[in-house]
Image (cartoon, rainbow, N blue to C red; front, side, top):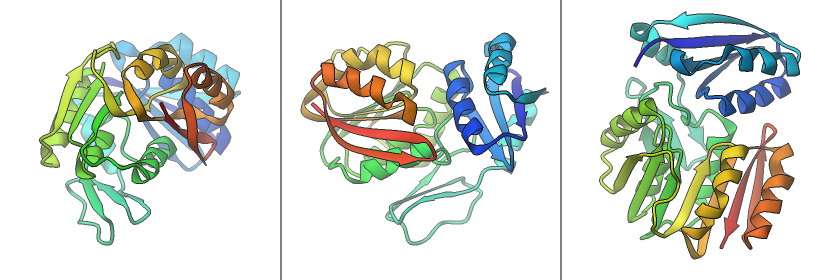
Length: 271
């Protein structure tokens, strides 16, 4: 893994931050940190597109500064700002260097590297809350875009019989392997893949990515969902809702529940 680029947007509103995170996710950024009125975003140097970032900043009328983080410094930067997350009394997410957290049903240990999905972001937080409502016992699960592996790990903890987790990013796959081992999971099959087509069926599909990726892959996700199965979608802004529901309605997926948090939404649908 080489160097990373850090982009810091200055003096922005909460709404600008949410919109920037969505836009940056679409162009390959997968690490974010909000510090006061500033937003830091991280991407591997080889994936960085300066023109795309400049266009995004112009669209949302904000300025940024750019810096390089050397490979050897990356973990120290990430760990120095990583704080535990507690989702109600259901799940806590902490790093190995944090003290155990009492009063929750499940405690997950996630190495704080740059893979997206520590529970800090609203979309991961809502996915976890929605997962609490679903019966995972003995179910087969597909985690599309697993990131840190946090949702796959939780799926095993709450009873899934087999979880298939995929991501197309080397760093995410490496990080997921560490986290799966750290949480003593044995029922997660991790695959590096650019394709959502696995030619098997799943009782529950988790997709916390972004609007464009979800829309592109929705028909194939539906084909792999068992009748009566649950599809849980996030990585979506409130403004994405109509486009997503138009697509899911055309595939005869029934909306069961919708949740909102900080201008983001999470949708639970049933085959």
